[in-house]
Image 1: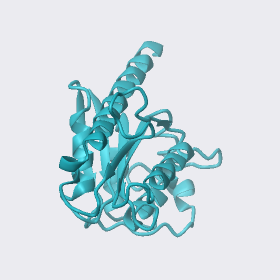
Image 2: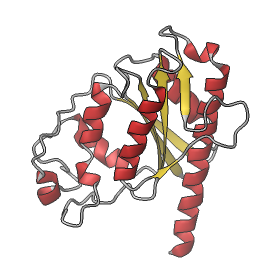
Image 3: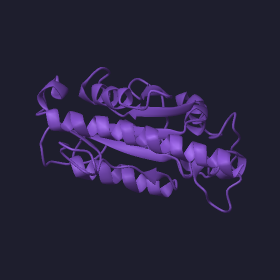
Length: 216
């Protein structure tokens, strides 16, 4: 069964970002399984740029200097077929915990000199992004572009929301919270982007998985 993993970079469990991600995951194909990973309260050390992961990284311990909560996440991410990353807008970008999480993806990086056992594990897998902003035009697109650059570094397939009616954006999931709870109940167009995103990521993941089976 195709598996879609959602990652929430909000420090508030159960808030607008978590709920937005849940809405997108609910819209995934009925033949997909889904999992939501919340980074809130996880212990993830900052990358120190030592590059030991490229020289010594294994599937059991991809990042030799740091055996923390990220260690288990590596395996869950490597085995996924598609992804949806979500973050609230903090000072025009993703949250600190989301950036630290992304910085720890060097074991996946397809560097020709890397000997990491996870090298290239995310290549050609579909990935979409959700941004939750307190202001309608105050950092939402910047968050999406931050995610998209990150996806490109990992050679993933970026998924937007074009082609779905009554959506607020073609770029991905966009929710205007007005810095208040229950944003989903107030932003109908934003909800449509979440549903479009979840549906497209799952369908593309299924098509790519099926294509891979035919090639084998």
